[in-house]
Length: 324
Image 1: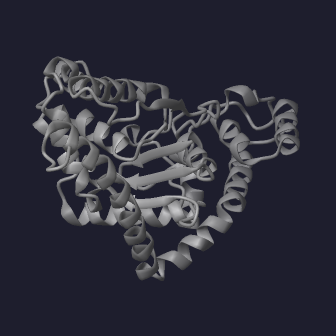
Image 2: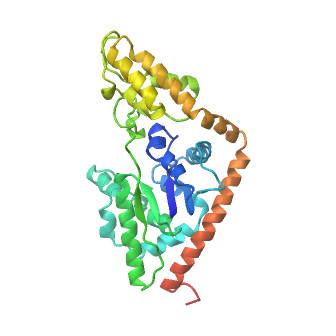
Image 3: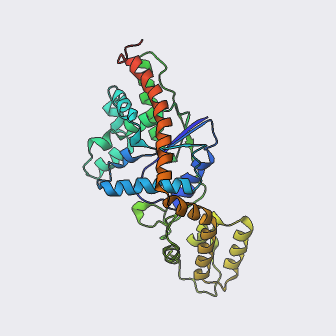
C-alpha cells in the first residue's frame, strides 16, 4: 500500500494533532511507500510572514522526527522542494471545472461569511490533488471532514484520464483516521488552534504544567463524588494512562475526597512520562539542524524522482513531451 499525508506548518503541534492524526501517520510508515510532506505551499494562503513560515516548517520537521517518524522507513520532505508539483497543478487546472471548486468547503465557508477569498484558496484543492496524484498514492489518511478533498482529487484525476484516454493517474482512496480518541481542549471543547484551547506537545515543562492546571472544571467540592465521564481532565488522562490506571482514577473520582487539582497533577505526570522520550529526541534534533536538513533534502530527492515520473506520464498524455 502506498500512503501519503501532508501537514500544514501553521503552528506547533498539539495533543489533538498527535492523537487525532500524527500517531496514526507514524503507524502507517511501515507500508510499501510512505510519503509525508510539510505543506508549506498550502500554508501561504494563511501565513504571510516569511520568518514565521520558515520557523513553523522547521519545527514541524523536528517534531515529526522526534515523535517517531523514521527517515529509513518514510520519506519526509518540504512540499516546496518538489517543483514538479507546481507544473502538475497547472496541468490539472486546465481541465478542472470552476463549478467543482466552488463546492469546496474552505471557499464556500469564507464566501458565506463575507470574507475575501483569493485565488490561492479557490484553487487550493487542485494543488492538493497534485500532491496526492504525484506519488501514485493508494491511500490518503484523512479525517471525516477532509474526505471531500479526496473525492475532488478522484474527480480531477478521472477527468484527466478520460480526456486524454490514458491511465496516467492512480485514483486514491481515503483512509479514515480513527478519531475515537476524543481530545478536549482546556475549555472542554474540541482541541483546536482556532479555539485557542490547545496543549502543545512540546511545551516547556513549567508552561505545560501551568496550561494543564488551567483546564476548565466544574465547581464540585473536593469531598463530593465526581463523574469521570464528563470531566475533560479525565478524558485527557485516558489518552496517556493504561486501563488499570484509568480504572483507579475513575474509582477515586466516584468515591469523592479528591480535588481536580490532584487529577490535573496526575495528568501532567502521565503526559511527561508519555512524551518524555520524544522530548529528549527533540532536544537532540534541535541541537543538530544540519542533520534535520539532510533528512529533508534526502526526502525531497526521493519525492522528486517519483513526482517526475508521474509528471512525465501526464506531459506525454497531453502532448507536452516529444515522446508518444
